[in-house]
Image (cartoon, rainbow, N blue to C red; front, side, top):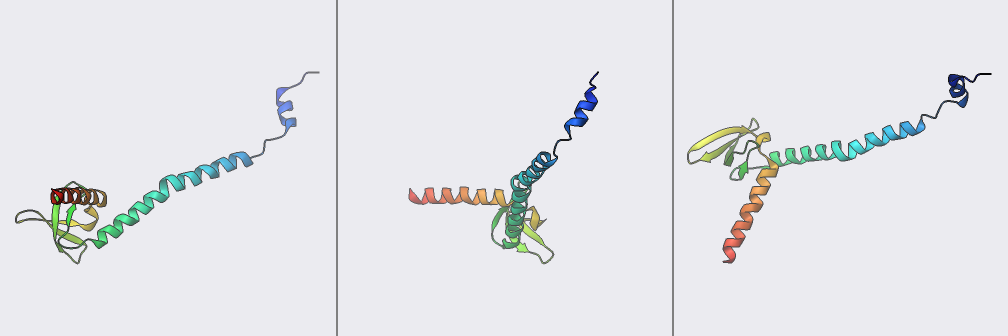
Length: 117
């Protein structure tokens, strides 16, 4: 009597697919909470920031251009003054929330430090 390996494996029964299913569902949940959800939240905050900026504010674009908002146009663009008498028209979405907020914090710290001297 020879025992064939294939017959032994077939008689043992097939393993349950449940553990692999739980692992796949777990990987999708982890990806959602660590990658997709924070990115969507950040995009929502960026959009809210872009809609809230007004004339007279100092901003930095995503390309690194510093300027002051001169006029808010009806078509979703901004006219910024980048130098004395030099204006550029940019999209609202081109204003970087992170760089603008970092610049504001940096300048507020400088103003506070110079006032205390």
